[in-house]
Image (cartoon, rainbow, N blue to C red; front, top):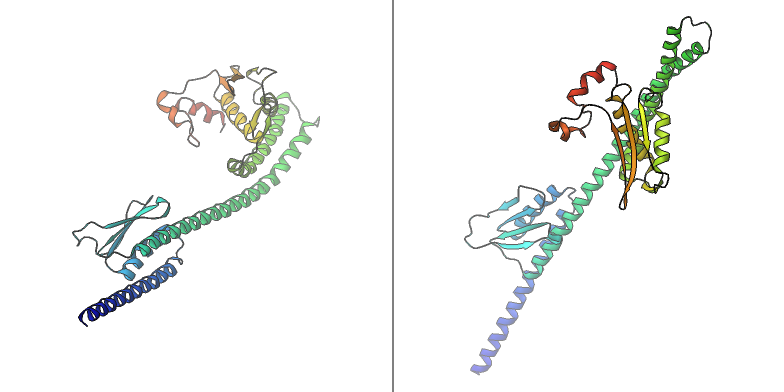
Length: 330
């Protein structure tokens, strides 16, 4: 009878323990579901991290710290400094951060679920932030294009009148004096230049879009350089241009439009910062699997202390700034 009683007592205790464990796991799963519902309402990484740490403490007690990669200040909730024991450290999904739990230790299954849940929420929030950033950039691009198109239209209305008047005066015999005729020619040609500048401004949107998605096509540097020289022949008339591009130079793979813009900008700076009659060299050669294009002029060297600034937007060297402004070039 004693053995039977002891056996029955042991079995009863085991049943009670299993029932208590089952109830604990059921409670943990309910709290996990509540945690997931709360976290899915967040849209940014910071908001998701802060909400996660607060909900963990609210659902499981104790204290918690979440350290997220890329965010300097950790997210903290509950009591995290009153425990002498080391925290339970859990890495979130994809190694995006570290979760430290104090004063409470969920089951292994719940611990794993927490890891996956927080990792998924952080991934979702990061994706939402990136999506919002892209949409914001697209809206900004659309606004800029609208403004550029409006400005171009407003500029071209008076420019068309100037161009028409200058062309009529240039073709008329009623303009007396050689000097007056030359001035009319300057007005006519500068009107063409202003029209080209307006077109280049409109091309800014194309440049921005191609920087993200450039075309890949066969490009002949010789053809590109010839086209740029033709476009800029009026401004290069006072310079000695030396072109050395081998006929058998292989084509390069790239975006022809962007390459033309690059050559135009560099050549534009080369003639602006060269004295009248100075030589400008344009050369290209193979270098292993690459093709190197060089544009070089005769002019002042860039001081060594300024060489790190030449790629800053609108930067102009101190030695040449005064002469360029005096001549009215930008």
